[in-house]
Image 1 (spheres, one colour):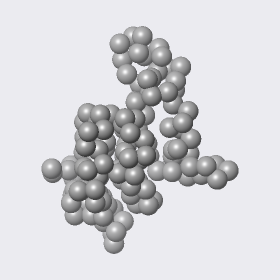
Image 2: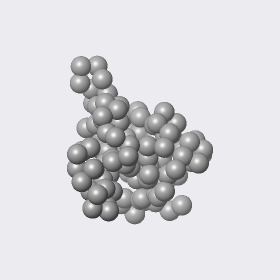
Image 3: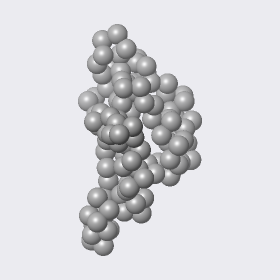
Image 4: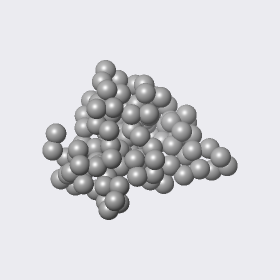
Length: 120
């Protein structure tokens, strides 16, 4: 990704990485997502955080706080704890006040809503 990021930057483009659930598994006791953040050069690979990983127990606010300046966007989603499915923003388990407090002034540029459930 870093090598591709160098090439895309030279071409006037920006390389980005959007996570899914698989990056929140572990390899030899190390969370894959944390390993990727350490490997990716922030000058060449920008991050978009998929908030839906709350279903695995990982909060976006934790990552925006732990890795300030690494995320240029967030893919917003909320989850019903009972139905284990996506629900409209604000009707699930994501603590949105905590999320927006964590992303405030952290160089985040955009929010994206995936499946029509975002109404903010």
